Amino acid sequence: MTLKLSITTEEHGELNETLQAEYIKQTDGDNYTLDTIKAGGLSVENVDGLKVTVTKLRNELATAQTSIATFKGIEDPEKAILALSKYDEIENWDGDARVKETVAAQIATVTKKHSESIDKIQVQLTLAETQLKNSLVISSATQAIQEADGNVRLMMPHVMNRVNMEKTSDGKYIAQVLDEAGQPAIGDGQGNPMTIPQLVGEMKQDEAFAAGFDGTGSTGSGASKVNADGTSKKTSGSKRVIQSTDQTAMNNSLEDIASGKVTVEMAD
View: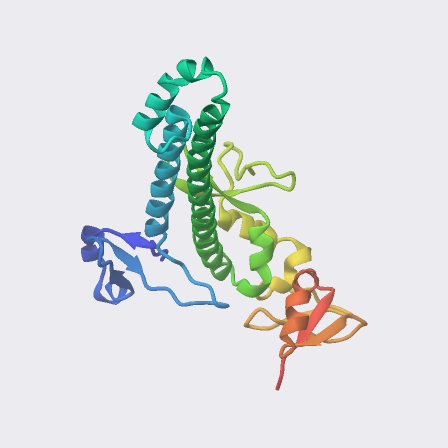
């Protein structure tokens, strides 16, 4: 039976007691969220708060940009209008060029201040969108890899390289699977977008990623045996072997491990 990540109070009441216990009631609403277990340091997260933060920052950025476009970066519009109304008069003053220079300098200072504020909001927005992407994509990818009996640590970099976060026309953020050319991937004959579970399923059938899934390793001379935890152990041949306790080597060899070029020997 497939369990939803989030269900309503009504749906929760329709489940039996055993399945009801698998859900946690959210403190900020009446919904229930599936209680998941971390795998490889990753877990399914509720990203609603991040979505609100990104939307808020986008609105602040739009407001700030409108302000600087309207007032040309002037902090005090009334004073600026008064100064500009005197411009023609000042222009006809002989020997008072410094006055015009002073006005121009003040306007430049205020414009710079507003520009710096916009840059600050833009940085905050970029960080929030990056955090939202990581939470949204990693949560979905973690669940899909686990359901496919895959090794999250090995497969996550490959999945992340094929997934991006996109904002829909109605303001929602979704995980979008890309093809090898960086274009939105098609998941079926009806032209529907490919989902992350479909992408993981496709990778599971690819021999290059055999070491990343339980039970899909190759056999024969020089083959790797895939253990229950998704790691592989050299049986014969001349493949490079690294120890599972050598974290640096593990991190530097993720792609080779996934492709089967490198095998990992577990510590006793």
